[in-house]
Image (cartoon, rainbow, N blue to C red; front, side):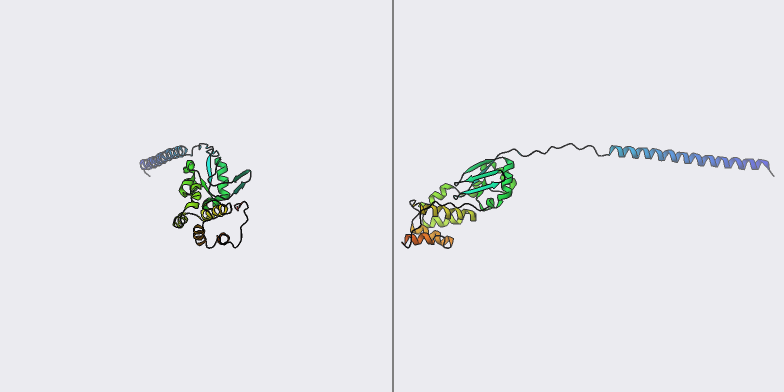
Length: 224
């Protein structure tokens, strides 16, 4: 057997093994480098601590306007507001206002309550109307005693809520009983009776002398 050939073959196998080992070591080093980069990227992308946001109760005062001529009582826990006249204003804290809106939103929808014009932005955020948007004031109610039948019809048509129509009926009836000049006029009563579907039958009958309505104080508290 040729010893030289065997030696050469053995050396060749050693060289091939060394190359494989070197290749494996290079691949291993490359994998370690990749793992190191991956871990570093995860560390950089880790969520940072969020800033602490403190939520405080709103402190802005809000003006509340009562748009009804009949007395009304607003009662919400410790909040108690007794409204006695048209256009009366009450200043509430924002927290109190939110509580009132939560319980009495239907009053806002009927036009019994409105937000003061100085609190317009809050009214918009709450989806409510301001007093001036309703265009319904005590001055207009006072004019009922001097309006013509045609003017009353126009005024009635311009009322935006059922609550305001009820306020007109209440106001006119009260001043009819109090014998306020202009509020016992037959034409005005006939027009209002027609517009309301017979709400002034008793007043019209009194003018005809059929009976007399006792002159007591009208006090119609609003239902919650």
